[in-house]
Length: 444
Image (tube, rainbow, N blue to C red):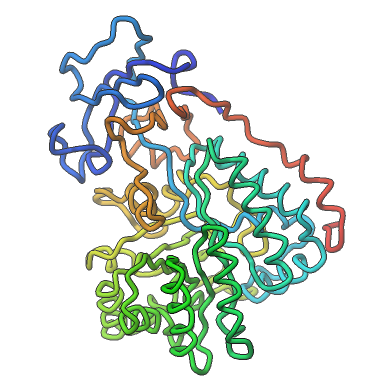
């Protein structure tokens, strides 16, 4: 992956004539509108942004290397708020038989039982993180399949990986189990919430329209409140307009007076409901302060898939309408080379560009770049995704000068700086995973 700088950066430097989004800097001070682009000079010292000024305003540092970007864009490193590192890269040994959601559930379930040892999970997670790091991602939340006995394997591995990667990627973990588990075993929510709290994680679940859903949601919300945990749900990942757990979650949050952060991913069925019903749900979501994550690549892959039939819809939720209500919105990678999504590489820039095309986040592009920077960072409770004086010099640099050029070339060269230093952008070879692909379920 060729970089954009004339030579590698090794710490302190001065970047001249770069283009930045006003929504990711102190735009008012720099005279850049939040939905516009502007030119700046940026000084890096001791791994941090030491100064940020309008281009040509006289910012200088005689003793430092100077790089004239000639209008090339500068972005902060990116934030991926919804991933599945524990599932990643199992597709070669456990393919989805028909590309459907049901096929994915069955394939992953079988692979988990057959192959998800600590060594297997750790190797695949580390491989995925090396991909994300090379592409310029600095913050990731991963969902972790947490039904026993997998919770006793994957959570310790996650904590080890998080420590190993602490100086490169900030990792959060969110547990994942189907809400229907609580129908037969309501006490499970306390045991998994204790495990999550001990690991400093997020309490999460997949919601379905099961009998007694409101009561089950109350159990989850109260377990989070008792332990000071945030919440992250997989919601209505279906084209069935009768799937309405999104509304039920909003009501549970309001009913219980939950004050932590709540994130809902997918919310696909919302786009299949009538306008009045969808409006009522979105109003409740806004009132409850819930953030929403769309997973455009995965949902387009899975939703409305029937053999021999062209899909009729894109599978994504009503992101424009939610954003118009002030709901925090983000887009994220979701699954990577597993039965739920056969492609992807944990490249959040690819996610943003594909989301722009799938969800029509353009004309104008405006401030939609916040959907992979400040908005997901806020959902994670982090101050990240901005270019801030005093903040880390964790940057993506491009020769491309505007949104039109960037969105047209998703594989264009980028230079990734971490604390002012150029990093290696060599992606790991898939052959590294070959020894893991020879077990039960491996492709012939």
